[in-house]
Length: 334
Image 1 (tube, one colour):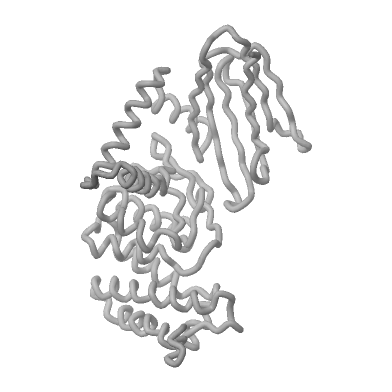
Image 2: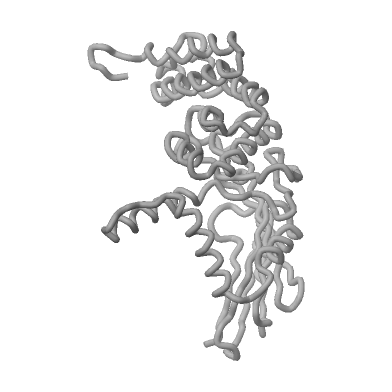
């Protein structure tokens, strides 16, 4: 009874700007900009209701921004339906995404279409197994592995870049959520087998982020460098794709971006280059960083080798051996 919907933009992290606007009696649009893990996260939305609310009440925060909306719908209809479009670009992008991706109100039709899309993706692997529990575990895990990275482009090809400006791309889909320390070992190598077209777009996204933001991402979220995790693991993602024949990207640009990442002075890299390892006096996580830089440098070396860039390859083959400098043969530990 007295069905209510609350839109609460203050929930979760530190909201720095917001807006809630009634576009018409049954459509709300708005924005939410926040500062947390992603230091400047832009989120724009459009919400359509299948009914017109009978009452509506705005709440403002201390800065006078519209931050909460309480909608009451009464009891006349048995089902209240909502359609939500989102964008990282602007409100018009959210409206266009909603109208393009959800033109009708038939929920069962959307559900069937969604099931068909997921079945197509999951059927890329055919598992011969009679135990239903094992089947459920496997395909649930495969489903989870396909959830990220996320499409960051609007339906018209616009996206927010690492420079926070709006860019247009009709050449590739821009993606976000690259938790690369988590994914370079297994998820991305899986994608090169099961998601070849998306892998090309992943690589093009990483190179676009380099051009717009000045460095290959380490852990990117919503067009933000989060500064999270270690290594520069965009590099093995790009090299793995290239070595498996997925080469529809600018390889020379990729090599320049890799060398640029490896020649930074932050996160222990200066000590790593000067002395051939990172000590605990130089930087926290010194052993882990030494090992991961050495691996990434090996990836740069084999990529440069593939492109015939012998001097770069030789330099990074030598750097890739730095892991030996922290090996203790007596204890057999790093």
